[in-house]
Image 1 (cartoon, rainbow, N blue to C red):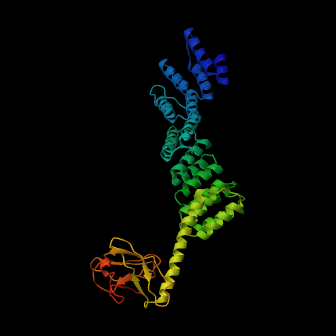
Image 2: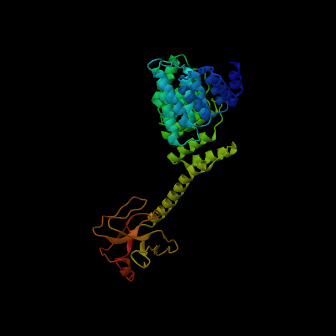
Length: 424
């Protein structure tokens, strides 16, 4: 009657539930329409517990829920972020569809509501495991709609494409785009963006660029999400020059302003390529554009800057040592014990001030190398040698075959064979 409908329109679920009790006490037979009105009121106020109780009350009264009643229960549980209860209502829907006596034939709107409720479990606040599970359930609901031969619309393809994006199923995403075109449901910018993001997760640069061309052919303008997917694809494929060209196209022909995600993808590409100079330029560009750089933006190039600085110092020291030649001898300072680390000092006759204190005592049984990648001949027995640090120019080997520890050789004369001589 009009009273339950008014309660549903205003969301007064308490009044609707009280009216159901009054009708039942008066001996008026209840119909699924009465319960549907109260469920609509529960949907408006996100009263998922009362909605599930009404579904149980319908089953106790031998009344089968309608598609509209199940949709109200799904929306109420989704608004309250109750994913487990959404799955419970889904099981009721499956049971009604599989009823042998009179199976329920839900419209496509019911499965769109189901996929929208399941997609609540793939939001940004969810952990990765829960998001993947939610995406897999969305695809399962989509497959159920296909098996029931329901007419798929644009909304159904959007939910499926978003799930493929999160799962990285780029092949299925491309197939869904083709199916949507064949079904008369053309994809929009968001659908293309989800398909491009699925391809970008797997480094499919060619597929992403093809989708960009298809968007323009369909009269659609790519947005920042689409360009960011192309940048991520180039990053995963280690194509820094192509990523920079996409950035120029994004700012030029596309007329789209880069976001912090755009620069994060570019900085990752610079980090993978070891191009720290380009990374620093990108950071300065972010400052000029007044984009808020986070810790991750500064952390990506900083590792490459430190590595480049270490390499530069090593190369300078190597060049200096190679300039001295093999006539310079290196004598270790007396180490206290074999287990202790002791620095060595350069005994250069004319350049006593230029001392290298980077090498340390370390027991070795094979060979010693440095950043020049030169190695001495393998040693047959474990001996004490000087461990070459990155600043040393070449390998260091003992001129004597003695196995005496450094403590015993510390008192050796200046011409002792325990000295270490540069083999460069």
